[in-house]
Amino acid sequence: MIILFANQKGGVGKSTLATLFSNFAVQKRERKVKVFDMDFQQSLYNKYLNSAQLENEKLYEVELSSIPGFKSIQKRASNDPTILMVIDLAGKMDDDNLVQVFKESELIICPFCYDEYSVTSTFEFCYVVKKVNPSSRIILIPNRVKSSVKYETLDSVKQALSQFGEVTSPVSDRIDFQRLTTSYTPESLVPILDPIFNKLFDDYIEAESKWETETT
Image 1 (cartoon, rainbow, N blue to C red):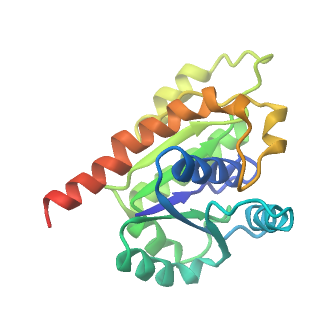
Image 2: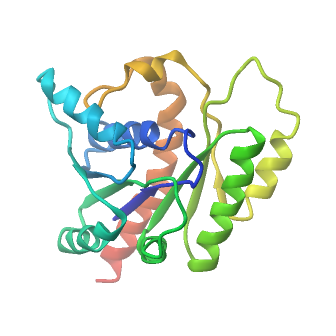
């Protein structure tokens, strides 16, 4: 299964949530995971290298890739459907190869922030994805939500984004994220993220696997 972490807006936490999700998938749901870093900053891949230097146990492999390299990932996913192929996509929309990526990704997880520019960019991103692939499954995660700030438009934004996909409970902005590695998730983040990721597995990932088993 191909799972895409994507949004055309940078700085919304795609790499961080892709790492947290991959850790969760291996440690809590006992799934095999392969991660592909397509982001220009390569922050997820660098985090993986840093973790390896500290001789931490590898939960999964992380490879550098590119948008044209998606075809290879798709082929590997079809060869072994038991592996979750997690892609941290670059924040861009001006590559024609993205059409194939959006058409063939089975789940698109879209983090966003509640600032005006991020919300606008997220609307544009979801609109394009749905135009390319009307049946795409998009999960929107409000991320880096500051507890000290009152978001007067939060409900209206959630309602509007719900036309594109499911909007999860928010993830607060916490210093704990700085201690995250590809081998370790801070325990303080578990109560926030486990309910979100468990629901993703129960409603989309495991449900898809069950459907595929029943139809083969």
